[in-house]
Length: 124
Image (cartoon, rainbow, N blue to C red):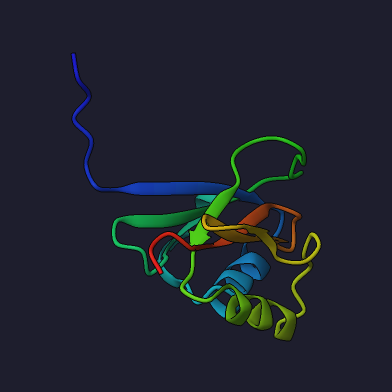
């Protein structure tokens, strides 16, 4: 049996302060609020990537060191890093360069959830 996928993906991310995280994801990453369920401590945002949304779930404690790392494709990694710098976003070192393949930078949301920006060098 083959699974029949739809062109949709929702990345669920645990956060300790839904309002602060919602503000960060809209301000820093430019995502837009789709809807918010205060009684459930949940909201969902568009990402600018067709079919991909981010769900923020308020939790008591965000556990570090496990789970998936969302990697967002960008056209210009240097511009993306400059944007993170301007917003005061904590990063894990400088841009990593894998020749003829990809440039990467790891950064963190206010709860320490790791994410990455990636510039694909094979399509440029």
